[in-house]
Length: 215
Image (cartoon, rainbow, N blue to C red; front, side):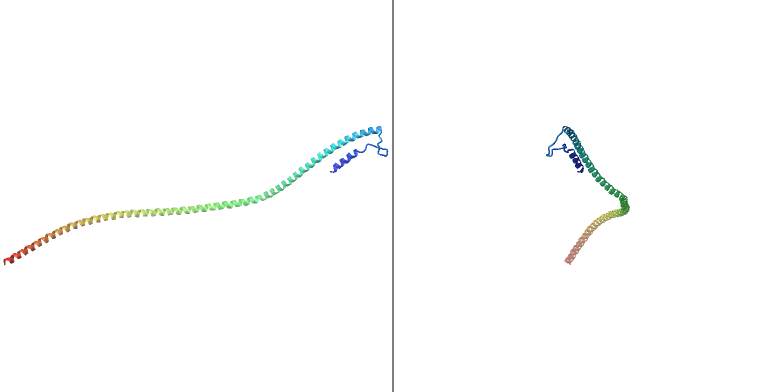
């Protein structure tokens, strides 16, 4: 990063050569005062370098924290955007909700009206069926009553016919008995007459024979 480059350049500047002079061959010409000053400057540079390193470390931490916060804010922004979109969709749905509710209410009203009409029609049909069933039951009861009367009359007629038949049978038996008695009497009478006639014929024949013999 650019901040890291700045800190690096500052550290490099603080690490500049301590020597201020030379003999032309690169040899260092050290003086007692210069040496003491160099030691002091070296200590200061070390402390400065340590401070800069700490600052750089703190800066890295701050940068990491800022980046973390930035990432968190990006996530929050994305979530906020999604929430806004969801709220917009919900608002749109809520905006259409009254119309949808009205349509559902109208549909439910139509269904309820249809149910009421069907219930009324079913009740009328049940009443007509009950009326027809009552009339049919009344006709069946009346028919059964007439049939019962007819059966009663037929039973009485049957009893009367049976009594008449029994009387006729008794009369016929009595008549047959009288006829048998009469036939027996007539047969006996005929037998008597026939026997008497034969007897008379025999007597007449005998008289005739006797008369012929005397003459």
